[in-house]
Length: 75
Image 1 (cartoon, one colour):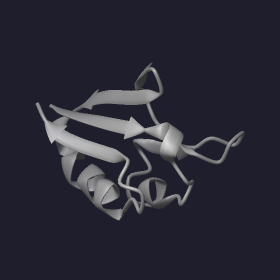
Image 2 (cartoon, rainbow, N blue to C red):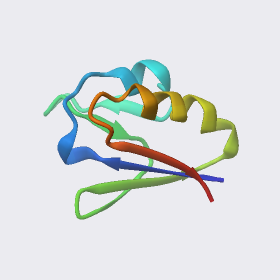
Image 3 (tube, rainbow, N blue to C red):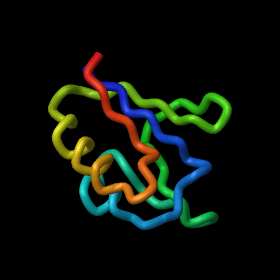
Image 4 (cartoon, rainbow, N blue to C red):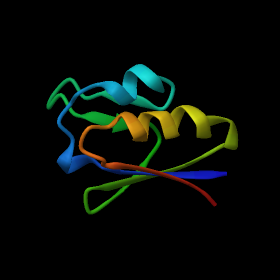
């Protein structure tokens, strides 16, 4: 299992995460920032626990993020 952490408040809406991992990320039509699908929100920090097979594409999304607000770790 992996844990994805997204510091959404700092998102600039570049869409890289959506392009790379569209099954886990989408863009909020209201504010243009990315949304981590099926994540829980705790004080503006979004966390999702997802299956191992999503690791590679989400690591790529994290590495592509120009503001470095996505963290992916195996748990």
